[in-house]
Length: 462
Image (cartoon, rainbow, N blue to C red; front, side, top):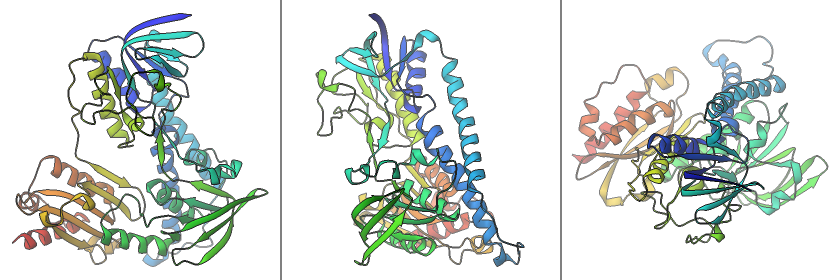
């Protein structure tokens, strides 16, 4: 039995784990990075990058089929070759993965360990069959996995998760998407624009991450016009029928619907990958889901030299948050017992749909109603948006009544991903609505819509 002694053991070589490793080494500690699966991060392999590659193909198809509104006519039909679409998605995906793998390959061999880790006790890990690792501190950065309810597991390979989409060699003809969160909306709309007959079945009226009732209602209407979208569907049965699936569900209107699909894409949430870590062998306090109870500020589990970062803690499954948390966890693990809070950036969330969905700062649902005013803008008559025929959208910005500071925003509209960054910077700089309105706004740009919303908030404050 090989026994390795190290200052910090990091379980998981994804975005959080790689950041934790680099931070621990930078702090002067010895570190071992343990990974049982394929290297490459969730983002590069099955998340951010391949999904955006599929969305890019969908946008190309959409622009080609809607050019006539500008007086630009394409002779003949636009032909979507599913094999070519998926070949590019996989080719470029592999290129992005290659960059990550090259970074791991460049690490010293003695700092890497291949195998699945399991706790023997608080400071001792079993890795594979033949290796034990004794660590002064441990970082859990094992990521998360899609949830697959039992109803769909019974469908075998006809029930898939987002990971499976990027293994396709060709596009199917019919797909039901279960879940109207960010992943469900992004992939559902992309597949629909690529000629797949798609039904997106939400369960609780959800539209991505939106919590503002007016914005969510507007978004529901937009997506319902663009594809078959049921924000409040209740799936009653899912039955395998050869290489197809027969679904029966109650629609948002309460009508019983039966339909047949090639695949059911389940996008019903994710869960932290902690079940196989043997945490019951430690003295850590665990919650009802088997996750270590930890301090969200420092990422430390109780008073133990153990830290949990990235998707594994189930809080903010976003790459930049995982990297920040990994960096903090690695530093705290290396310097234990000197532990400091994570330096958080302004909250930002984006769904790469069309129109885009974005949220910055405080959610509408979390703000005290009497504490803020709402500035509003519709993008339907906003100049540049109308010029581009991308004039669908509604934005709410939230401004504190007492301090006049911008505190948050939720919206759907054109160029949401870019406007979101402007607002996140303003929030992190703690700007007031008056200071934001003194910033330059060129003409004609979509960002002028943001100025309209800020002006509306300023008027309501007055």
